[in-house]
Length: 341
Image 1: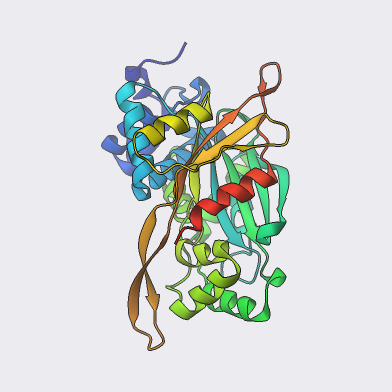
Image 2: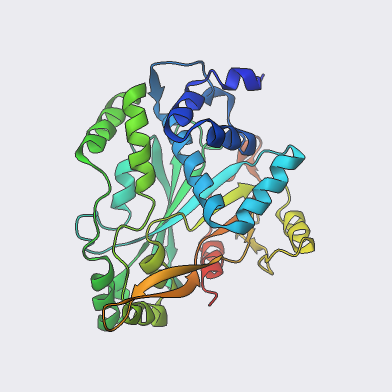
């Protein structure tokens, strides 16, 4: 039996989020997202890795709704209808190169995800994009804690001029993780849990990793990147923020049709995996205003593609077991949602 709303307030997960982001945001998150009952155990002075992973995912989901108006509208509809969203996965982009203080590519996130209980359960070549995707799935609650789809862009697959622009953009990135956070992740990896007070310090540090860690790019570098890789151009302005968050729904086609009826910009096609068990579509990316440096070193603003919200339907691969895999073709097509200019 699921805990009552009153009991939710007494859970460790609620207490952590309440301390870190306040009661109003915590209430909204619990109203919007479906949470597995095992993550709602009574208040304790220690959190296990699954609870901390869930808290991080909830805040990253919230970040997408803050940055993507269509996501906020969609979530608002669900809350008013009394339907809780099933957060299926979030996606982010990295660069497999020398990033300054930030570890290269997916290593910047493997160091967080593994202590939180995630493991890489799939590698997906995205050759047409010059990228590789990796799916990180939670070991304790694989179907209930959202996965991370972490992609790496490989600059060496592009021209020398492109590679030089990449280095100018990300080569002096900062590492958002302080030493104390790295120590806490070490403890979490070793014991599978963390003291409540430590968790309240670590959680904001983890959230900060999902952001841009480099300075405003030059407009000329952005144009050079855009000419060869719209994905790298996106990284230049958005960094490691969630590219999209995804709601797991029973019928992705019906959801897409309903969103079109509401006049919302949904991708025309539903992408279907080779197995036929995974079907995806999405809103078009939000256009956002970002700052760049011009040739004289002055800041100028331009509108560029930001993040978006996705929908996915997963069928069972065996009775009672969802197909949690991804599909390279699906992912490549979904990535095009951020190529609008």
